[in-house]
Image 1 (cartoon, rainbow over the protein chains, first blue to last red):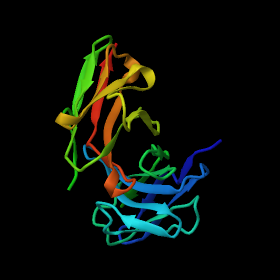
Image 2: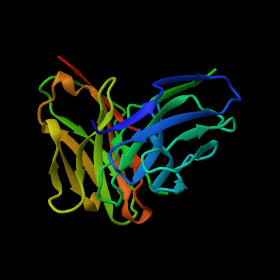
Image 3: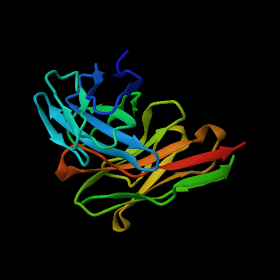
Image 4: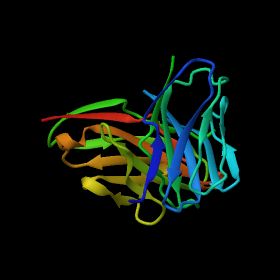
Length: 113
Length: 114
């Protein structure tokens, strides 16, 4: 079954700890994205990668880091520098190029205690 | 900076009522336009998209949207809603000169009562 998997579904961390959210896709897509969803705020772009070993900051990259060492994987690290990390995080992928829709994973809800 | 506005935060309708959700975007050159839907407990999924050609596009589940270039708008419509349309709807824009990333509106929650 092709798709995007994000793990875990729920994640709890103590304040001051870094945490890494997993995103894997088997759609053979070139581009991958991380969004943050907060109630009433829509989806805001954190980072995106259009090709392996390359990524760009989105609108709210501060306090986050990513890597893209493999085409199918795009992990997101929420660092202790992120002031308000509790949120729902969505990963997406697309074939790349402007004429392709993005496909979304089920999301990870991160709660920082 | 580019932005996307959705006019309605929460819409409440009875079954069989007609639906129109507004979406406007700021100027930024050539755009691709999308409507996504998030049903309760489910993944965000694509309803419809516009790249070029006929400005009236049809999507899944009886939804359609009209691109009006002069108004920078891409409103979503459905002639008769069902209880199962209860969901959150997001308008998204890709500004082609900025790469492949999408800018999303803040979303509209649609509640349909039976």
